[in-house]
Image (cartoon, rainbow, N blue to C red):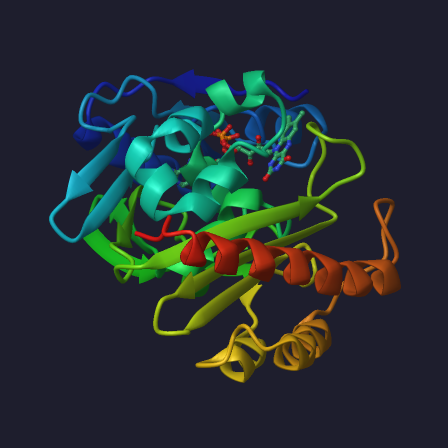
Length: 288
Ligand SMILES: Cc1cc2nc3c(=O)[nH]c(=O)nc-3n(C[C@H](O)[C@H](O)[C@H](O)COP(=O)(O)OP(=O)(O)OC[C@H]3O[C@@H](n4cnc5c(N)ncnc54)[C@H](O)[C@@H]3O)c2cc1C
């Protein structure tokens, strides 16, 4: 591991000044579950690691707003998975967060870190895509907002400039009567990245959202499949047609976890399960 300096800014002014000063040679540290691995394996060699943990203004909770929720930059995967409002209204996100790594990883790692790491297999990213997430981005020059789908560019790549950080993620309140779920296939239950991840939400009106993870350079919404199901999501033939469209939209690679053919097949199996689960939840009156 190459040597690096370490900074613990105490407030936002100090934080953004450091990021401005060091630019691309600084790495932001949240929980460190990805960053420390990357540094020790030589994938990253920052001159300075800038910790967010001592910055007074940064939130480590989920805050209820009038029109949605705000996930603070330091909110851990455990905090998000266990939050009652997340579990009720954004169920797929709670289910995705609880499937990340081990308990220790979830107690340390953050949802924002999971997003900023930009892995195509990041569990919370796939689930978040159902809920129109907007990221608040901060730099010395000011704040801007960006939709998650525009933020993610490809494996390990985001649209963040070198001197910017993500401060929070806002999720608007889903339409009353929306149910959602997240399904993950991995080699070992518990501590492995998704081989395939599928998130689905169903509104009472019959609108469906589908997000796929680990089957392309970044997680994405399977829009053609969503349109196929619109207004008629319970018809079995229609579901099978939508599944085929989702499989066509997937661009999986072959790697040590699975072949591309297997991944594409599993998109179908997981989507079938996810749709059944979300529709059952809607029927069962769990929708909110
Ligand atoms: C054993 C193990 C198992 C794992 N299993 C899974 C799994 O099953 N599913 C899964 O999705 N992930 C898994 N992970 C990956 C990891 O735990 C998550 O990606 C985690 O959520 C990252 O959060 P963090 O707070 O630790 O981020 P960090 O490691 O601190 O940061 C991650 C990256 O994001 C950047 N960053 C962090 N915060 C910000 C910010 N606010 N603004 C800008 N950039 C920022 C960092 O510079 C770094 O590049 C696993 C990791 C390990 C070690």
